[in-house]
Length: 138
Image 1 (cartoon, rainbow, N blue to C red):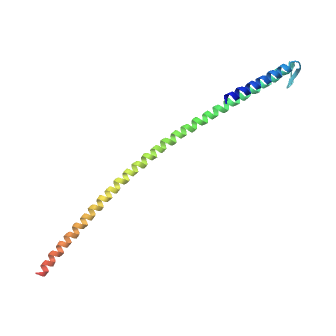
Image 2 (cartoon, helix red, strand yellow):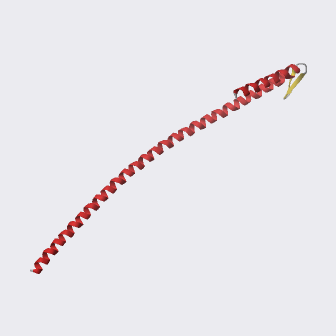
Image 3 (cartoon, one colour):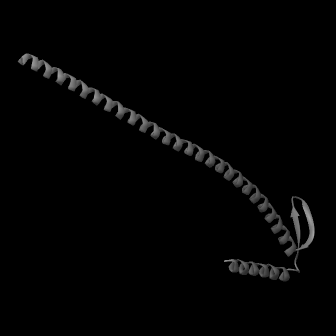
């Protein structure tokens, strides 16, 4: 790709050089808002106008580039803040999962105690019934 770029640049430079060499004779008078500049070779007038245009575009491009850099840094800061918020949210979710596990374990233990208590009550009731049945039989 760089070879193509160099070939194109060489062709452009040779074309400009050929234009300059062929147009050395004609002189032109430049008039700009009432300001008149004496006979100037045509290639010089074109070169100066081209140079002024290139400088103007360079300045516009620099300002645009600075704006893009500013926007990019703003977006990068926003991205960092978003990543931090995401990590905090993930940490909160993990903490909530741990708490949920603890609560489930506590509920299971309470259910086990409740079942044990119910079994003891049933056992006591059964023993009492058997005792009362034995007394009734005697």
